[in-house]
Amino acid sequence: MAQTLSGGCLCGAVRYTVSADFIFSGKCYCEDCRRGSSSGHNSVYAVPEQSVKLTGKLTEYQKAGGSGHPITRRFCPVCGSKISTTAAAMPGVMLLTASSLDDPEKFTSQMSIFTSRAPSWDRPPADTPSFPEMPPQG
Ligand SMILES: [Zn+2]
Ligand SMILES: [Zn+2]
Image (tube, rainbow, N blue to C red; front, side):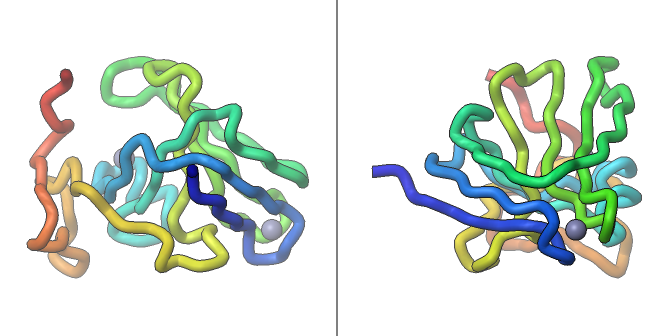
């Protein structure tokens, strides 16, 4: 049976539940994730989009990712907490921020990506695979 997770933003205006196992999870150290997360990297987990039930209004910001396909990042317009990301290159998949989980221990990172850009003050963990850029596809 799939796990059920719950999460939301800092102010409580946005809440969500997810009933699905992670498709993948990880830490992204790309420049966009660094700036967007207000930290050295963004920790996210991927689930089927239809498994996410979200309440509250999110503001979105769209920018092309490294592949040139648009990436949409959504955040609470009241408190600014980053909640979700969807990528045109990954239809039907939603990335949710580990930071938004009610119980952050429900998240485990499987890998670190774009680690060639990790700042000296936020190094990738040594106990999971690290990829200097995107991991090989397939
Ligand atoms: Zn909020
Ligand atoms: Zn990134």
